[in-house]
Length: 237
Ligand code: CA
Figure 1 (cartoon, rainbow, N blue to C red):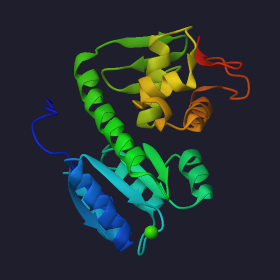
Figure 2: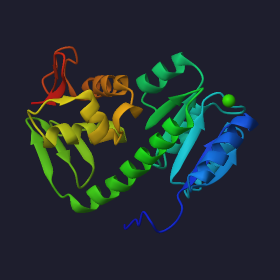
Figure 3: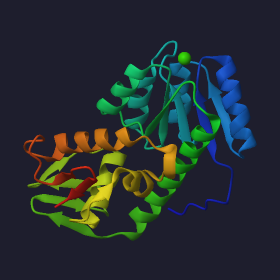
């Protein structure tokens, strides 16, 4: 598959029931050179998303008919379009990060338009890069029982497949490709998530590492693969 970044406008689906927020989003996306479409409830959002012609989805959580969590799961069963969850509640952030929804990112309301646009850009770039990586890389990385297959985009441990979300996979593949080298959270946000400077939340790294450990480590409290370097960051060994 060939993706030409400059070829056509990226199209973003806004799933948001509050009309004024949807309009502000739409206006800013348009100003930034994106195409958009609006869905004003969860059902409509899922239906539109599954048509599959969007480059990214902005997904509110509190929605009529079907909440954003359900919509997110529904999209992920079929598509890997980047999803940015939009939430007004701090406890939802824990849920987004803790549950294995498959969301790529989140922003909290009220959000700064510049931060949101930066996140959109980073997620679009990451998803475009992934296609290139997938097409080019044919390398299989082995770390003891762990086998990371960059061609099949799959991970096994002792022969058993491990289901990882996109970002969990990217983080693992990145650490494995740089075995033994510790990275600061900021560096991981930049290299794996594609965020520049202050746009990322360092907690995102911690929670993704913890989810990854739950999936690949025998005992996540005594990791044998992904280690923390105290006061620094993480590395794989
Ligand atoms: Ca709402």
